[in-house]
Image (cartoon, rainbow, N blue to C red; front, top):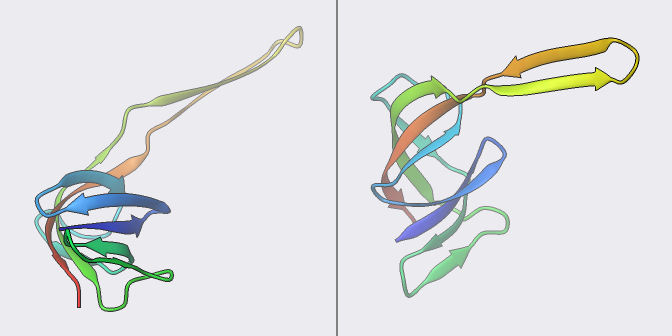
Length: 104
């Protein structure tokens, strides 16, 4: 059984037992969270596609860790004008483990 969920402006295909890194979510490490924005649920034979969400479907997940990704460097330069600007960015993420997928 798998589902397609939406969180942090992105869509993920998940199944029970999967670990994935998503945009930062509120919740302590070890706590259970419920993801209600389920776009599709499939159990092999039956596939339910929402319009836009599947009614009554939810995904239970456990927060494994919070962290920050690798640094991305932004470099701006104007030639012949002695303008150089360097900036860095590290995106925060939450690592979750999918516990179960519930569909009505």
